Image 1 (cartoon, helix red, strand yellow):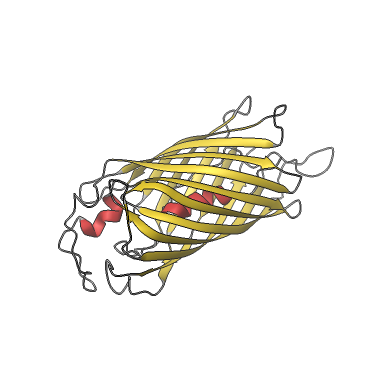
Image 2: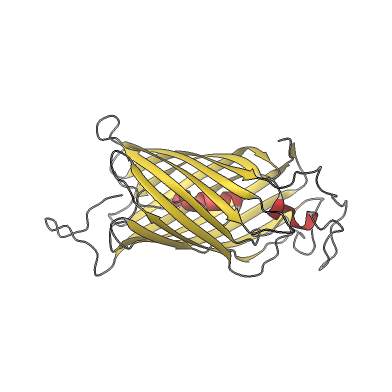
Length: 320
């Protein structure tokens, strides 16, 4: 069974529009890598209050294109890099700031994401610690419904665990991951985040794999909506922040919690090319967005001249 494409990392990255996401438990072998390109279309109908109640104060649609590279430095050490390009628009009665929430798309590059992971253990479980750094690519606007991100650097430390049974359900696999993200302090508040992932998949045949996933974020600290803010009943004039400084930073400092569920597929077109797709939905949240959407993409496996070679077959062995 092969775990070659990167849809889960990109998907979870886009659900919450942050640079730090999960790493996979499996790593490419030395000298091999994967280039993936993922397109995602997400829609927000409701916002969550701190109580978990949903309110409809306008809708947000975001489209994203995410190139990512994952490369095996050794048989156990891998590095990956991504830079999403995001465009979003808000249409509704309660814009945060004009002209960004005027019903038109606004966007550009979001945050650089750089990760390193090391496959520490392979049996009986695949255990892979990782670190990941997210850095804004530019000084984009963060106070807007249609903002492409929060504009905060974030460092995450975590561990991913995976397993594929060789006896019971040999065509099935699972992986779980936990990471703790340390974010930039804003106006004296640093709402660090715990991220959790559970993913399972089953290879129907040599080409088709089906997947299911659950992802959650729990914020450690931060403010609650609406009780901790003075929310204005009108949008801020262009270039001017709202009267409550905290409200102009609420996406950066709120106690945002969520649970997202999704399912998808991976189709191996050839030995080196995969296509994949995933549908996802936010089923619970606090102080954030209720998101649903689709992601589709393609990945290509490449080999450096120094890639490790299978002496018997003359090709690199499948290890993912």
